Image (cartoon, rainbow, N blue to C red; front, side, top):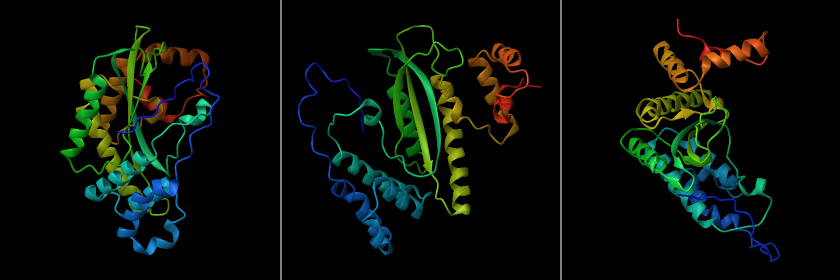
Length: 267
């Protein structure tokens, strides 16, 4: 588990020297060693790779082999353990990190109590997700990201709720795509949508979880597409939103085929 926080400085905390930077060559050593074990022919290039490049190179060797992906995850965990520490900088730089290359991502928000009084559903969701992965053939790469936010006042937000101190947790899953291997990209894409579908069927209804709007992709199956639309209508005031769209955007300039397909009424 890697925890990243962005905490404001206390009174008088900003005057000291910043902590020394982590030695990246040492921090990335577990990933580099694993790459050289699995692909010794990459020795010349491996020495100049950063963390994300090493992870991408490792996953590209066998992206759908669950055992290999687990080994890569363990090497990444060792990298983060070696990278732990603290530093002082502007807040927008503290939370930024190298995400790697092209990827598929799905993220959901779920209610989990109130600020300072979580009801435990946030961690139980993660426990169930990890158990689901362990019991399946899903080759799930790191990280599974989890973050928290207060509720949103916007009725169309996945984190909308009534209480001002309501707490919501966001959980994101990921798979990485090689740039120049079309067949591998398609196989990974298919595996990712299977991964996402398992979460949609087994976890989202149980935890009242709803996808980030920018991460929704309609399923290929017509029945599942209809189920996604019905679930959106159960959660959000879709008719009111469509009425506002017709009034404020009568030519549908601000929409697209994806949004129209998600918000259309069932026949």
